[in-house]
Length: 295
View 1 (cartoon, rainbow, N blue to C red):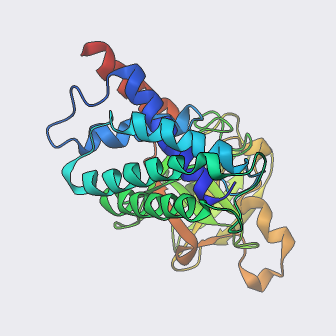
View 2: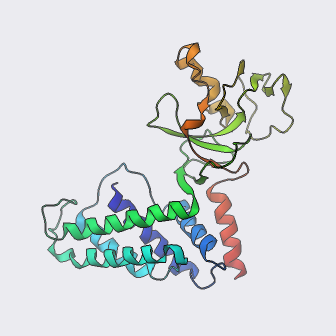
View 3: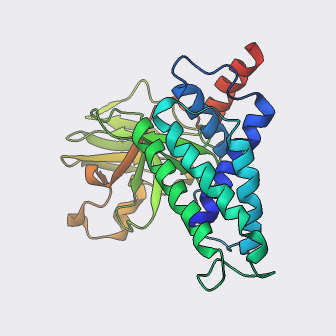
């Protein structure tokens, strides 16, 4: 799915939630946390997609969704520092819909028909709005795929990963580029820090020779042995919470030469961090639903 479709889908989803939940009526004092939570919840319920793969709908479908998105986005009150970008996007969405009848019956988004530029302009305004959202909130949204992070994260759930500004802590969740294929992003939990000697022995995570008493972020104890190995400087040893079914630091070393140190995640590969106790969508849905119920 290309950027135009992704962003139009994103705004349509925001609008859907705004209409159903009364968004904009009781925002937080500056509107920022309320706005963020509502966008995140829309991502969680599957109304917003940031994935680039998949078929591209025909241009008339895009134009139709533009009008629905614009009408509903007007109902979502944006905080002052993003309101102008949201309005520019709304205006561009309306202009994109105005060319609907000039679009052939079935045609993907190509520059060869009248009105294509209006749709591309809406795409550009959507990119500006999305980039400002990331700048203001300092987060990126990532989708967890597979069962390796159960029970904390179900497959298909999203997390809001913050920019790395503080030292990474044990048990935080990392979103990172996979060291063996940086075109792929993973989500795993930090189990050992730079300079620590890590071992998995008798189902226990052992750091510097002693089992960790606070190691409870797992579904079942590990059924493998690992190490001992020392985590290199500026790198991290990571595990999935579903330790018996996770392709993580304990397994990566088998795919490269020992001197390559590919068991570990270099700091340079980290895309964002998530609080240790976050359950992604479940966390934000629970908090926002409670707020709505109390309003």
